[in-house]
Image (tube, rainbow, N blue to C red; front, side, top):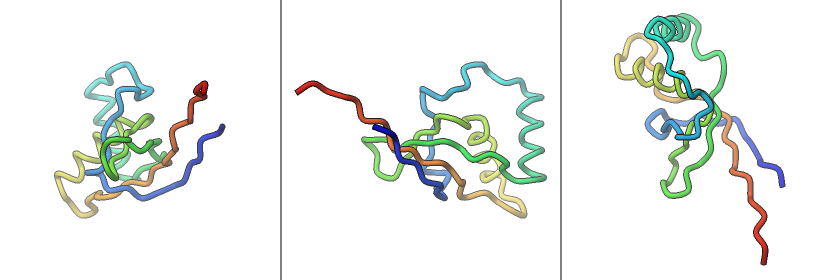
Length: 101
């Protein structure tokens, strides 16, 4: 079966980084500062990829875009002229696994 996906606006407080996030290496402070400057100047250029968490209502796990999420949360906490309170994300339903009967 294939997973269904849809582009949605999800509140930042409803997003958490998944342990299965695709980025496994830590970024440097310089790389994080560069990403923050880019998002501050141009906004988010690439949407996050998330899936609903089964145990928490309306909470989504970020499987691609953990660094972007952290920067967006930092900018939202700082406020400013354009505080980010919501994020556009591809919401993918988890693939169903085949189970023998």
